[in-house]
Image 1: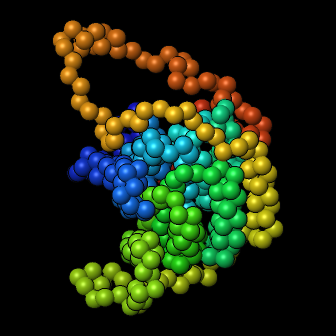
Image 2: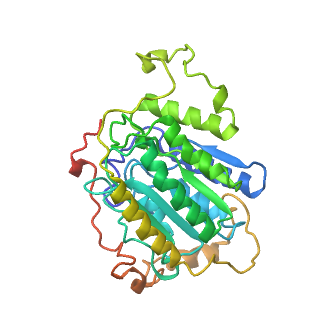
Image 3: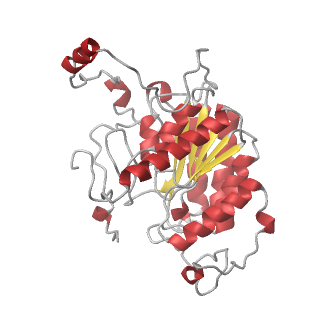
Length: 359
């Protein structure tokens, strides 16, 4: 448990394996549907667990369904764009694709003394992935207008420069106003405007869940964004229908949220400064990268392969730890000044270290 960071902000609970299986399987299945052109938009609100690493559970995330889904999309698509609007930085996804140009990651998140402590403006990728990582560090209290003033121009430039063939959008609901752990001030419409904006490009789109710690607002958010994806949001009444869960939505029983009086610490000057710097990074993109044509592997999980006794014994005797630098070039992770910074030996702050009470 200690080795894989299980037990603190990733507790063991009954049904954990089934939960991970459903979460990851839903995102992979959505990617397969998009690959087969069986749908234009696939949704898995049980997915979006963007903190999980290859050997490390983190931030309530056990298995990174996003990475698995993107790997599925890469079987059919040369380039995949990942966009993250959770209040927390999508560190697990960023790390997985930090050294490749086939996946571009873009994260809009609260930065500073805030979990997971990553997502610096200067983290831009390394090696072949240099300039294919984009981080927009935000301050507390950002509202709908300020958010769209940075989201739309940044994403427009990314789409123009990178030209992805498929898009994955993580719709973490903890960036909504009133979230127990979040510090943003977005309304449902402000949050859903990001979904609408990505839809207008008419690319295969995978919508995933993520964070959200005021449960009634999570339900509101993803119900509304499902309606947005279906193009029927105008027909959804603001008055919630009475049902067995109505008491959770007291006292107003309405769908849409009103922003709080929280001060927006993101000044126009600050947002403009970050935008200019990110535009400069995007100008560093050489071109939209391509890949060699290759045979498309089987969809979904690997098929079970039968092995004879001799082969099994050979494999068992060959078990070993990976040698240093076997799966990565350490020079790709060295400090590059204003470029990519090291993931190696970076100490990740925990939620409990930042004074956040988890119940």
